[in-house]
Length: 328
Image (cartoon, rainbow, N blue to C red; front, side):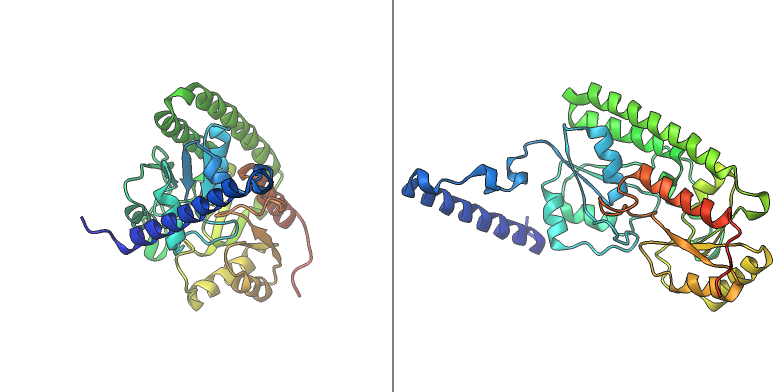
């Protein structure tokens, strides 16, 4: 079978790396103890020392969930970095190289990662688990995406528990000796998601009945809105839609005006320019940016899924539950 260009690149890179390390070791042996490689100075990459099975997730939120289930038995990494737009992500040769050394790829499914099929095919024979399997999807009702599943099921703490079950099953198959630990970690994490569900429900119950319309850039809050009795309006159904039509924007402005929505929001992975214009034209205000498709950096407001949900609901409470002055 012919070797593809990506495989040749991986092979060349691996050979080059191996030759470098062989050379360093030979030099170390020849020069004696004074030039020995010092592990404390990270002379050998951590990944080279880590013999745990490697799990690669398509985006950072799934990596956080996977780490909660894996504990210290697996090495979990995300293909995309914090802040990446994942719907139309363009994977790189280095992504393929990382995936070729993985033992499992974890994806969301429901059409979220438009690039996932091409990626897994390029990565080779790596097992894949789809975490949304078993979730009853909500369907998009408008535009070209009408009838297709809304992929943002993890935004419901209830649905996210199904994700955890899929992770427990996949990790137990990958590493049978750790099955009992994965099961215990999964139950503990599901308990935290259940507690979060109650916390968010109590927080959003305080919103006035006439101020429960959540206006966002992307229609990513359908599951959360269903769970907690909110209504939803947005500029586009999913972030894969790159153009905002004047007609859709005009309809949203009129609805925000009519319903006297005190604040509108956007997501951190896309430009908020259009939504700020909606706020200006409607007499509303821009209430802040949500984390949905990506976590923040570790020192940001949403380094975990639980923190992400709390950050978003705090913004919703502040924006819709207040009588803030409209944007001038």
